[in-house]
Image (cartoon, rainbow, N blue to C red; front, top):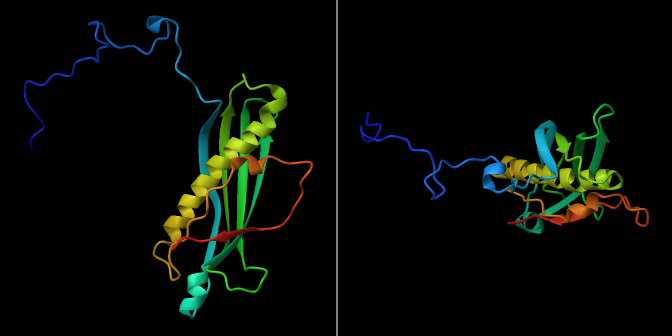
Length: 184
């Protein structure tokens, strides 16, 4: 088994001045690397139930109907103002107009997040709602695409959504489902 040239030695990375590259902010003129305001510490799926609807005709399959309802909840840990939990539940349901749905089911994922203490206190809840929601929804989109890729009715991709929709709005309260046209 060849592991490369015998005379090969790892050299420290250089910044061009001959000095070893360092991640120390002082050595870089006081410039610190940019840290995200919300960091993912852990995320996992809590529940996955996905049923392929029995679609008998090509016309029904071509409609590719999916109706989804996402719900996001976040909770700040009482002993640590920078530690947050978020949970996203997504229901795939039959369409209200009676059209057969490609898939029905419930998926739920959750995550543990660390929020920078530099985020102003009055903005923290909405900031976590928006960004944790975006992260968890993206993970859910990927999971659904993977699970349905070799399924009876074919792969579906949930559409991207504006993560600001996870922020509660006092002026707009609706329980109407989001209508999704799945990709072909």
